[in-house]
Length: 276
Image 1: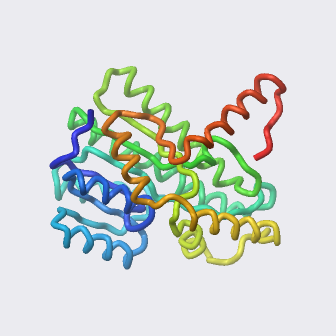
Image 2: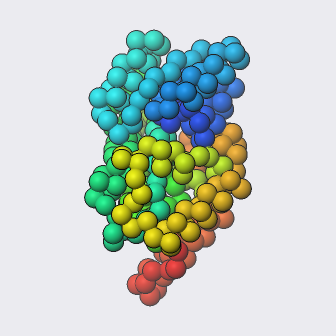
């Protein structure tokens, strides 16, 4: 089982939402924290929260879509703490638009953050974790990483990639009998500001090319669902418990997995897609 007290956790997207919930759950278990985020104001506020609580914490501005930023984050972590035991690649963005008409620049942006971010984290941090002889690397996917719905093409592609990345990583770790584990978080609706932050950080900050009435309505529905969703601190607790118990799948809404089973049944029995 993963030990927490006195160990070091790194969280990207750690200044708010699920990342902050993870940080709180790790801090409660005695971990030192390294928080990374693009939002300097939220990052400083999160850092101060933990400092006021007596938690050892450092923070760093970091664009998870850039390898050099992830490498600098790893360097800062090792310089400050000399080791790293838990890494959560959590930074993510998403804009609801059609897969058919989405601008290529937006495809690149979403995939760079949501998929290349975890790839860079595995590439950079996994060797450092393995050097400790034990530890855990986690990445945030989504239920969209298990079932592809319409109007979320780039997000679906990236999040499916995260599931594949972490599954491959976990299988390879087990094959070589490593004490390091990997896991993937597949949340349903969580009360975060990912939609608003995605709009704020979208390159150019303009409306997507196909910002149709359908896409706008979907965006409103998503935001409404998020606002009624699970509290990020609850997600943090689920992640901490799963890491301790060496679980691979971390599902915030397990009942939604029935949709995955329905899709598998349709694939095998009828070679068709279910509605999603």
